[in-house]
Image (tube, rainbow over all chains, first blue to last red):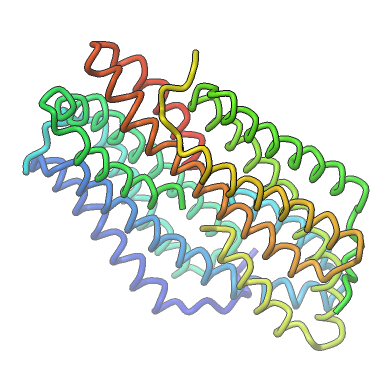
Length: 91
Length: 91
Length: 91
Length: 91
């Protein structure tokens, strides 16, 4: 199934490139014996960045795919699928 | 300040390399218009991986740096610093 | 605005009564100087219970109110409202 | 085992009484068919309140019990126990 969600590819790609760089940065911090509390703060920053990515995708998914499915009388299945992924993210 | 936490560098580096690959994988999924719910599940997997990295660093930090600081009568400052980072992670 | 979400009132009320009892239980544990790690585990149990309550309400809300709004061409506003509450819960 | 954590009982009890009232308030909202998004925001407020309670207990536990255990050369066991409860809360 292809995405019908009309994601803002450019914005998401920029965010993910930044996150990728931060993950590499943590590897370097570990290599260079940086203070572990500073490393933990960096891990927290990445988690914040990923959360924003998730919310942005979610927003497009609900406004796009979910609405379209509801209008095609296929809402319940798509919403069940949505709830499953939400249960994971509210962990 | 240098890390005195005795991190398991090899294990952490492997985990972070895997996470880095997953972040690149998400960029590819977005580029290739993959279904956004599948992308969201991948984001969730990365967050799980990062959480494990954080807990492993935290474990070494408390067993290592914090214990050492307490024995040197410098526990309170290090514990305040720990609580600050924990407040972030329990978000 | 009244709920059109068709919540399972009996199930939710039972869950909330149990949570209320657990909150009172923690007050008692504190009063009786119980071990703080045991208290923390109880707080964690309540948070798990509340999360389930939230997911159950969310499920009915999306299947009910959101679907109805979409069919009435009022989906976007209700979805924006939904995303706002989700941003809070993924904290 | 008794708490040696020197909790601020009065502050915690006040917070928990407020949370207990909020849990009862949600039961009333459900009974009175209040709008489910408003109910969800209330659930989120309780979770925020509980998180604060947890962090306050955690703070006293680490400054108190954990420090004392470390000084008595019993740090590792108490820290393992701490890490277990932290793994739960970072969920």
